[in-house]
Image (cartoon, rainbow, N blue to C red):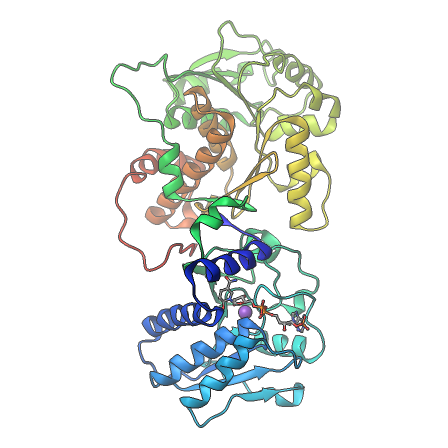
Length: 515
Ligand SMILES: NC(=O)C1=CN([C@@H]2O[C@H](COP(=O)(O)OP(=O)(O)OC[C@H]3O[C@@H](n4cnc5c(N)ncnc54)[C@H](OP(=O)(O)O)[C@@H]3O)[C@@H](O)[C@H]2O)[C@@H](O)CC1
Ligand SMILES: [K+]
């Protein structure tokens, strides 16, 4: 599934109307009806007081369609028109008139704070004040209304997007955005749904397909591509009967320092679980027994130093190198890093302390092998690309960095974003239980395991992040997300692979990213 900008959706809207020979009113009816059906399925006729807040644009028009259909089906509905201007849209007006036919209770016009209704905890609020047509920050009494709704404990359902949130621009005033409990969005999710500063206003969301022209949507470059099971299935490279361990490559893991050998153990195991044919792990001397005991499948080379890495010497050609997990920042390690980057033809995963070393020695940036996969957490990312003003600025800086150094940048988060040049890929697997020590080491190992099997850098990054998140979800489902440890993620990579081709129960909507 792709993520489009507001502008692209408006264009899709126009093309659809032309090509399908329907009116914009019919498209609104289609959209409103889908939300009504969603509500009807969930409320099942319950006598809950429903309060619909409708703006004066087409988002408000949707609210009026929903209101009319709910009234027709016997629900207890009050419609409020948030009358912030007199420039009502045509489709708003059409539906404003239509609602007369089904009720004697006219929508209540709100013009100031004096018109705010009391909201009870057991009310059900439908937010249709502003949609993707928001063009400035809500102020005055409309902002106060949003605050008023936010202060209530009533369940809040946002139509298309929580009012006050821009689909693909930063928030100007956090107090002027409706905090939805659930959002039902049309056709495709919006970029704001996935970024840390804005996603909190959306909570869970469902995507309702409203039949916008697919050909048109396929012809435009989206803001981002979502990565879920259907995409991951396409990434998977089938093994052939006559393949052997040489076919699946030989990973070199360079990891660990005194007290941090676990990072080496975890990434080594993860590389195997992702399918690497062989793994050699390069560690300081103190880790030899640990590695050989915990991962007997791996070969081990030790540095001449006891407690840190000083010179990465090996006598084979690795098919992928993952470096940085728990290596510390000893000056000798900095030199070792410079030297290992001379293996320019080898695909690299660069993680943790290797990233910190690069941030502190920016000349190393020029030595970065092209198409390396970099896996910073937010702190490491800041050190690498500098600070940002908001999430959108962060993405722009990350794109520039990726373009300049020709690397794949993985921005870890609740929705991990993979940046490759100007393209963004948003992962949909994973859960908060994965914020646990060693989770990143597991990810680096998985990506290295994929690179060694011949997945290119972008594919290894995107598929690796998906598998890692899925393994975490499976571990969370068995153990409870609070109890998930990095080892559990690794142990479930196999299940994540198996899940790829299991047939799912049919879903009621395209996406349900309930986390
Ligand atoms: N394309 C699709 O896929 C489909 C879209 N559909 C629906 O249409 C929605 C988009 O509708 P839309 O374009 O009419 O914009 P919308 O969000 O209702 O708001 C615009 C109004 O608000 C006003 N306004 C803006 N900011 C303001 C502020 N801060 N404070 C005060 N006023 C402000 C602005 O006023 P103005 O700037 O003119 O003063 C204008 O009057 C979309 O989200 C979806 O729900 C579906 O029905 C079918 C298919
Ligand atoms: K809304």
